[in-house]
Image 1 (cartoon, rainbow, N blue to C red):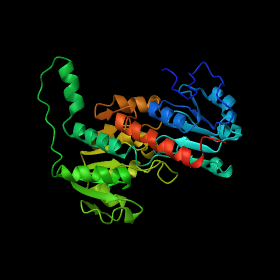
Image 2 (spheres, rainbow, N blue to C red):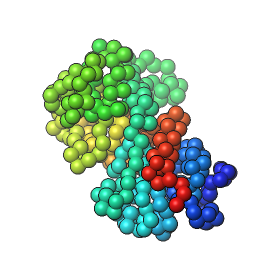
Image 3 (cartoon, one colour):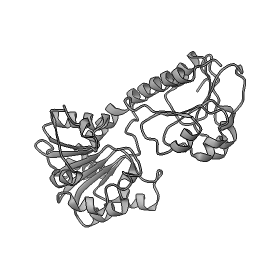
Image 4 (cartoon, helix red, strand yellow):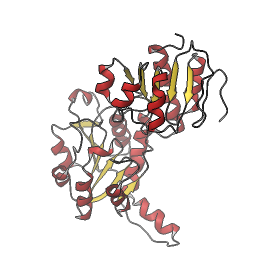
Length: 328
């Protein structure tokens, strides 16, 4: 990609400093929409675009920057933060914070920015797509047809089925609205019951157990925290209806993957769709899950649409400019 006018644009193996010292420096450590580079440049930031940066390079160079922008690939842990002598902002181009040491950032009074609203429509649409794919066994139909076989694959309709949504934030609400319009009955569980109040298309349930027992499809829309890590384990999977379906487009570690593999092998679940894994790229356990005939998997693409990436870029640029400002 060519350098943008007014923007210091540096490729992976050609790190150099040529912009005026009067500009705030921002390191973009993962691949983003070029609109973010353009917007930060317009706002007089010195932008270093380094999407393939290694951990060793990041540790070496982070001390030069006032802000860093990451997605899910780059880990901003305590060691990275401690090396960031001038660091004032860590911006996550997305929703989760599991790749950022929040406590260390807070100890050093470093602001953390996210874009919670921008990806919601795209993640919700992917969730619906995965649910439909499970119901109609599209992964099987695709594969057989590509092999030259012309077989009738029987699935089910989602109309009239019950969808249980665990986590009723922005994405959960959008999934609920879309599902209701497709003729589904929508149950919702969130530790913050006020999230569900006022949404006429969803019925609030008192406990997650009640939701699991009552739903034909269960979808997860939660942040990864200590309380949600492996929230769905053997007990929770055992409570689900026989031949029900599970969809996860939030964070892989919310499900106990060993327990999930057991539930699949024992025939408890009719199918699972996952966009996220505990380890990305996949480790040995994840590969077993991906190869299971009842599993549909996508490579963490929930927010990977042109529209979502543009909204994320615009929101990040606005927030960085507001908190940091391009001029020193």
